[in-house]
Length: 239
Image 1 (cartoon, helix red, strand yellow):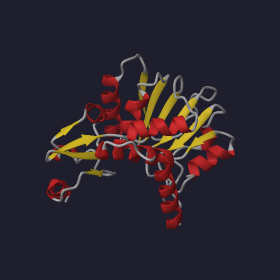
Image 2 (tube, helix red, strand yellow):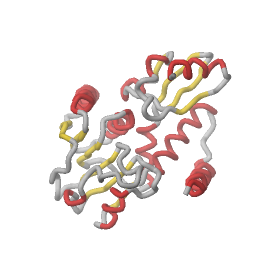
Image 3 (spheres, one colour):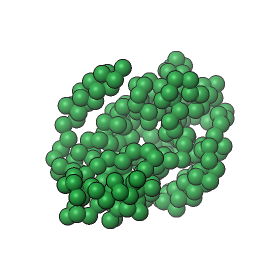
Image 4 (cartoon, helix red, strand yellow):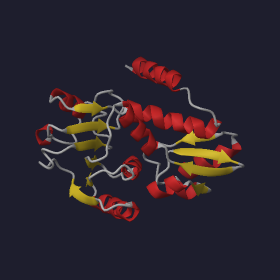
């Protein structure tokens, strides 16, 4: 009942809402307008109410970049492998394309969604970057080059999920990131850490995308320290 839920936002006097999977793309037809960044991404994770109009934003990509910065990872020059082709994948890809990465590889289970994403990103890329689509499988690529491997799929949230990428295909200069924040270290990240690779858990992206949404709604600087402690406590209480 997405349309009904969205139509009730203004009536309830809500200043804004967050949007998560699977509604980041399907909510767009019910919004008044999108910011330029949300238009580029083609997905919305934050809705702001402005004079009874619903404005769609996307803070996922910038939130992910801030989590990389916190982990002291500069994506410039990296070969990026993105696992998945959903709304969060789009946001992360659009942000990384602005950071002078070397190449971008999309690995998707759905070739239709994967091809659509590659086509959209190719139109957005301002520099000559190789954007390719591969089937959703682990391939021995870029073994001796810096690679940023990012899991944007739900694989790793539930016990017994298969690894989204085989550790046997990791290279020594790789960095592994996951958008999943619970568990804090997914099986993919644990496997990468065991091999001595730097890892970037999804908790950072969750924190920073929320902080950016907070600033959109309140027009005040987000209290990052307070939010981080509250987030850690909430997740700890869930265990």
